[in-house]
Image 1: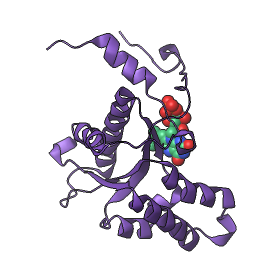
Image 2: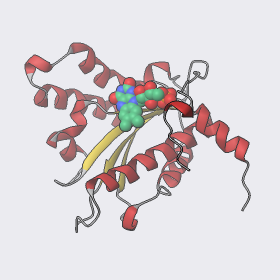
Image 3: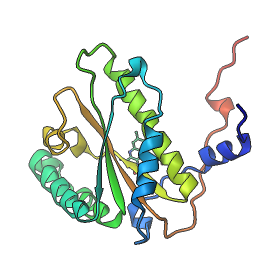
Amino acid sequence: MQYNLSEITAIIRDRRTIYPEQFSTRKVHREQLELLLNNAIWAPTHGMTQPWRFTVFTDNALLDLSEQLGRIYLETIPVDKQNDAKLGLLIKRPKLASAVIAVSMKRDETLRISEQDELLAVACAVQNMHLTCTAYGLGGFWSTPAVIHTLAMNQLLDLGEHDKCVGLFYVGYPAIEWPKGQRKPIEYVTTWKQ
Ligand SMILES: Cc1cc2nc3c(=O)[nH]c(=O)nc-3n(C[C@H](O)[C@H](O)[C@H](O)COP(=O)(O)O)c2cc1C
């Protein structure tokens, strides 16, 4: 099989985090969200457990999500650690996005695959979604607020005790110029051995 290397390289390097505050009100179509998910599930998976689970919030469900995140924050974060700015973002952001995809790891019942491997597989699925966003010109933001690690979040997402929410993935059309990224060159992060 032959692929266009320059195109895949451009998509990988152009993938950017774009925050909900930077989204326009333009709606993302259901078919686009379905392609994000259909590409997500082609991530590698140790033992083929396919541990990814998605809960897609759109339209009125985004208002419910905003309320639930605010409630969970106030109920689970100790009062002395609560912060109005963080609470404000949790409530505001779902209302600024066209869709929020809560991404979770459902642990295989036998526990035969390590939790780390199951989480890594889900992270790869998120990357697939984010790259697909880039190809569409959509902004994506992988958010991992403290509330995702709570029992209340597991209840909201119908997750079991061994399962974990790995983030809220916000999707929307950018209202800004596509951001530029930067990375340290490979010399800083690579050791070659021959
Ligand atoms: C596992 C993971 C969790 C992240 N959680 C957050 C987050 O909670 N808040 C945030 O502002 N960015 C979060 N990010 C996005 C990073 O800030 C972003 O990827 C980084 O700034 C590099 O920018 P780029 O994605 O445009 O290359 C997260 C990224 C990853 C991989």
